[in-house]
Structure formats: structure tokens, C-alpha cells
Image 1 (cartoon, helix red, strand yellow):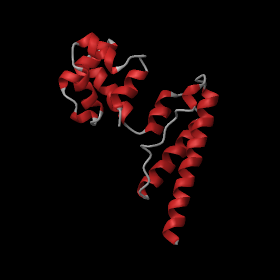
Image 2 (cartoon, rainbow, N blue to C red; image 1 turned 90 degrees about the vertical axis):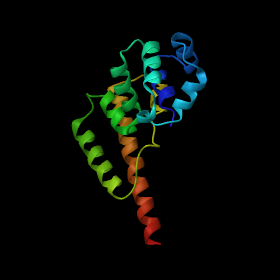
Image 3 (cartoon, rainbow, N blue to C red; image 1 turned 45 degrees about the vertical axis):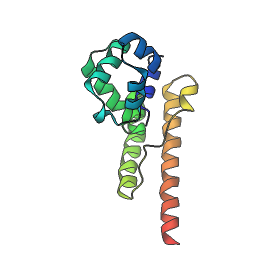
Amino acid sequence: MHTIDDFLKYSDLTRYDIAKISGISETTLADANQRPVNKMTVKVVQAIAMGVGMNPGRTLDELLRVEGNPIMQFIQAHPYMNHDLVKEVKEFMSDAAEKGIFVENLNFDQYYNQPDTNERAEIALRNKLLDLKDMVKQMEDSQSE
């Protein structure tokens, strides 16, 4: 969990930059970066907000979005993807969660190393769906042994 670092990537900022801009210590930011967003202090959220030029409320909303489900974050960031594909992924995620499979560790790092297009986004989402299906199959196979 490195929600602050992940959030700051979008602004090309680091915790060091936030510390310099806001006056909060880097140590305080490093400690907060290891905690869930709901455990961050108002002081930390205000410092981040100052650094990225947002109000603290919006900053908190964005931190919570970054902290959440990476597949849902990706879908929200790409609203023009094929709706049938999005529906299938959402349904499968629900089924996977019922089987005890959670997606917090999945990421789209490889996707973001190239230009962001709707076509590439759909390919990436299809690949994540295949990853989820593989995870479910592996779990079912291990339970039947």
C-alpha cells in the first residue's frame, strides 16, 4: 500500500516535493504512505492538497479512489470502453470475490508504459479478465486436489 506515492504519480510529484511545498516532514508523509487513507490525518491530506493544488475534500476523494479496486479505477478512468466488456468484468469480479479472490494486487503498470488509448484500454481490460479467470481456475483446481 503506497497510496500517496501512487496518487502523486499523476501529478509528477514526490513526497519530497510535497514536504518542500507544504512544510510537513517527509517522515510524516512516509508513515502516512504505509497506512490506509482512512487512517491519514487531516494535516497529511491538507499538505498533499496544497502540493497538488486541489482542495482537501477533492484530494481525499482522489486518494480513496486510488486506494480502491485497481480494475474499477481503470474502468472509471476509461469511460468509453465497450460496455459489454465492462459489464462482464464487473460480474466476474463479483463472482471471484464470492470465491475469496480479491483484485487489490492486480495492476495495469504495463499498460501505462505506452500511450493511453481506448483500444489499448480494452485489450488491457480483456487481459485482466483472463488473469481473473486463471486465478479462479487455479483456486478451484487446488480445492479439488
